[in-house]
Length: 123
Image 1 (cartoon, rainbow, N blue to C red):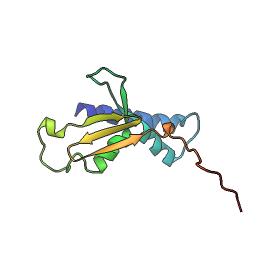
Image 2: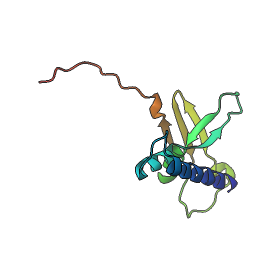
Image 3: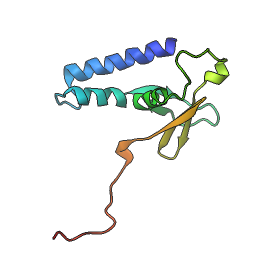
């Protein structure tokens, strides 16, 4: 419960900052505000074994896991803590959240590059 309120507070602060000051120094509309909120790092996970760099989990990934129902039904019975646990996985540039009923994965858009395979003449 405490983690949820911290995430909600951080998300609200990010949204407030984006609406007052813009994003990257630019005034923004509602869609950009939603994107800024979804791209906000909601959770920073530090691996225990083996020690490694912290893993950033953006709100977009948290929302994906929840909205796809991978945590189970909202009105269902509360399971044991081990059943309700969410694991954070990393595979290369991908970060995943694994819930009891499925997994959601996300690759940072800043890590993507588009390379044309061949050139096509116009006309």
